[in-house]
Image (spheres, rainbow, N blue to C red):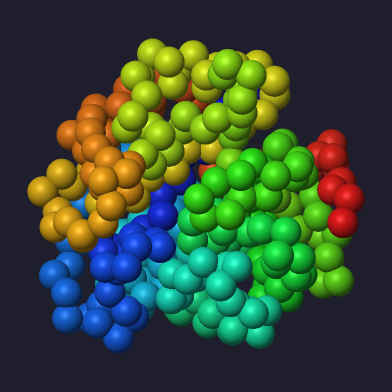
Amino acid sequence: MQKSVFSVDVEEWFHILDVPSTPALAEWGALESRVEKSFRSMLDVFAEKNVRTTLFFLAWVAERYPHLVREAVAGGHEIASHGYAHELVFRQDRTTFTSDITKAKDLIEQAAGIAVRGYRAPGFSVTKETPWFFDAVAEAGYAYDSSIFPAERSHGGLSGALAVPHVVATTHGELVEFPVSLTPMFGKPLYFFGGGYLRFFPYRLMLSKAKEVLREERPVVFYLHPREVDPAHPRLPMSAKRRFMTYHNLHSTMPKMRRLFDDLPMTTFGDIVDAGTAAFPRAAR
């Protein structure tokens, strides 16, 4: 059976995208930090279940808590980049974006003591309005990316993009892309495997949909944030809809995560790349 990838976007509780109450970068350092406790609770479960994961560190976190990066490396996990300033891609120009992800790669590598090969954009915010995205990621020195949501969504999405792992030719060499795993329900492609989706859907439905993806010889891309295993973390003011998606059913995250590790074999993005991508389709640009 094809293996799945369990990934974590390692960021703080206040790194919520696209709500008016989200604090500015200059304010982050003065806010209560919860990431050490919540992230370590995830590391404990990974160790208990003998699971290796791909961890997309926000470089702002890695810069302040480099010991967390080192602990993750010691636990055998793959370290990847989530950028530095946690800005939606489609709200940046190419120069600003490239500077951010280049800085992030350098800072995370300093903390980890190893090379960083993978990148994930905040909010999977790649759109048709950011045609330079893949070239910029490759230019910054990354070998693979996991930023594509191949359908419409609130933070953009790239409708019509290849929904399977594939290789993108860029002006700086080939870049491997691991899009979010969508699967149909009632004739519409949906995501069941991360964030609010994972917390909202019943476990049996999520597991059934994961097995559908695996039968298609696609890895299931799971993702969570440390705040989602910390039901007591502070809340930001936001609309009722966003509040539901952000905070609903937080108590269910850890039990579902444990069950996933019992029910599905897991790997890392890096291990998939190392196993070879010659059979991956090539994306048209």
